[in-house]
Image (cartoon, rainbow, N blue to C red; front, side, top):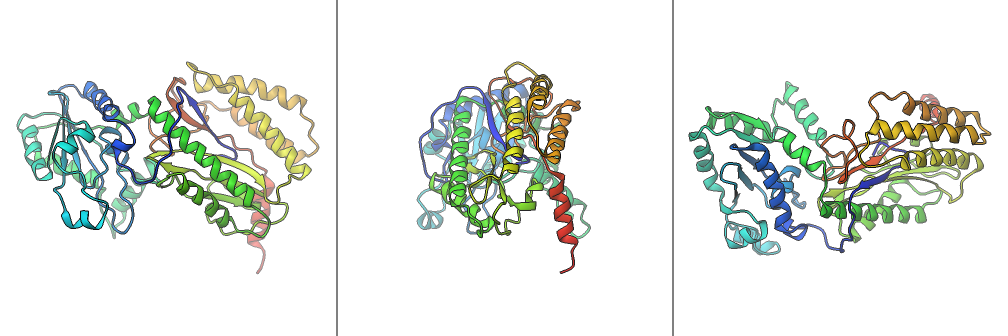
Length: 440
């Protein structure tokens, strides 16, 4: 999301994906063997231990239920208050589900997933039990003094990434008039009390490392999410004209997202015009487009639990001014220098080093007529030249800022990430400050 012009770069196999409607069960997204392979990887990492993962609770209002990222990744079951035990010793997965609720079923679309043959078939687990049996299952692990892995991080739902709920719950915990822990932290405390002789360990690093490398089916979904994002962007570009409001362009994209089966948005709409374009996470979306404005449009859908992150810049009236074209033109060339430097089996620093060589050649031959634009381009290149750790962007997957880490790793097949170079004209910020400081 933090880019002026961003695209999705996928290193891996890309496949076509059929159209579908929103609010899916996991079995309608991936076959059971996809989730079984993920659980097998977890078992290989935890050895003789067991892993326990809680599903999300029902939503607190009239809204679609969305499973949390870790539970969906491992089980694919989209039912509230489900839980799962993945046993590394027995290589067995047991899913705990709520009982049938006929009143809920009569008012909704039919039977929810409950313990029994249907749940076994659709989830691909080894056993399904009522949720009331979960306490006994934990007691059995405790009696054996088994090590138990469970997620320590706060659960991630739609339009969130791993750090978002973690920061929220940390703030709640520190608030003297709140003091609440996350559901996961509360569960860890209860688990330690229920299994005092067991070592309770964090499952997140194991699952997050697995999530960093996408399967062909995951790549296909992210590619489809990116395609839908592009369609929404183009609809906003076609509709844009001076006098419209930023939120009207958001509405254009949201119509397209829903039309193509998205559950919602990957993140809040970042649609900025005029001086608002300086701010990468501007999201008020209340300004009116003026003739001569550029529009910075950053928005993408939450499609079958997978996200994208796409940004483009275009003129509000459909035509670049000569100055805008010069700014956009040098940016595009420098951006392409990055894109053409990406390769497999190399580090991010290797990519940046190769890109800077190309950028220097581009800067030497580009005909600048505006010193402010040239200064912005010089700062852009120097940020990469002077970058010690090296950064291209962030992972994308079940979350828009997905887990698993990118910066220290080589770029191997199956890793998906955004390309997020930023080039700013500082005058935009100065103008904004002058306007905000003027008397009204």
